[in-house]
Image (cartoon, rainbow, N blue to C red; front, side, top):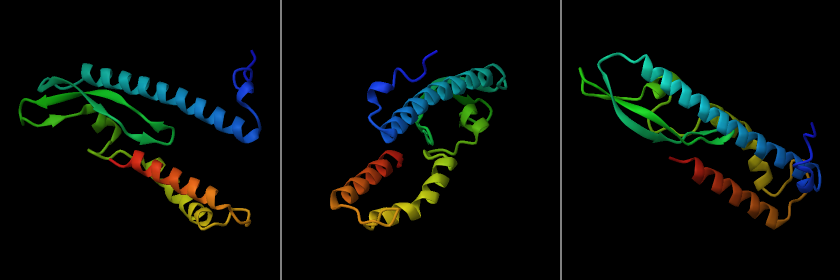
Length: 150
């Protein structure tokens, strides 16, 4: 098995290889993550209490360490209370209208001091950054925040 042949044409240096492998690993993980969520949602549907009537599917798009997960989960109406419920959300303790996973928030907080230092014009190694690098970093951070906000 030749694991590296598909990324070698893109691997101009260690940084490009690192980024390429990371992106591919995250993409594969997102696919598997969504498949697990769909199987769990199906199991919850089969085991649901009788008073919950399936009302169809609703989309959910949380943002995790591996990126944005877009999936559909079942919505139920409780015939006794009239309230709507998402058993998958309840099982995973997903709060309504919260998109960022706890892990992503924790990582973001941990990286914040390094980001501030980098954006101030100093590289983590202590050297000066070029203005274009600072602008690129700031732009990337803004894009990340826009994608992550609900």
